[in-house]
Length: 256
Image 1: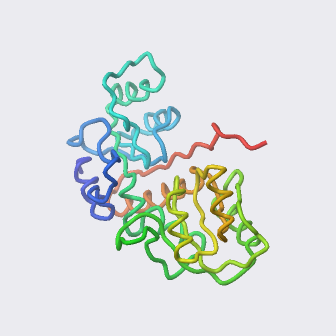
Image 2: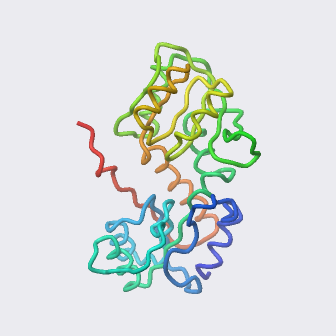
């Protein structure tokens, strides 16, 4: 099977056409016509992940976050950032990213997040769209404190930042994997009790929580890393070779 064929099959589930206009999902580097040997799936393109791919004869790395994002005008291999691309070129590794198309598509990041957290009867959170970012749904009513402990455990989060009155009960829950501050207002407008997301700015959290919603910031990593294991299973249904995952701890952000 060529890399192109595997990607085309995976794209049937998570079409690149769904990605946001500003995004850069798709081919990052490599040759789609190469035959697939083995596959590595990771949230980001990491140096250690590339080493793992080389050691296990993986010539395709699929990431969630695009490595090439801001329109580079030159690629300087003396810079550590671009050394990862150099290693991929030297070892004939092709890299694809499934980013906002994976956030938006049915069965992707947000649906998987709801599944893990036991949120049922889900709908698209982004208002005015049948297909869009975020989800909301329902859990059996319980105290916010109890649910927050479940969230931390199920997502293996290093730490949470929570805004709002956690003595309240929660039932209607919104989620947005990654940086979801822009959707907090959407969650408020449909009277969600809580939103679970990442990368919430302090003043946004404080101001919007005062309007009556609990905001649970689990961190960007914890809100999305779970999807690599879902992608692994998806690819195993398409491809007979070995499909590995690489998960780096969220080590650039430490909680003391």
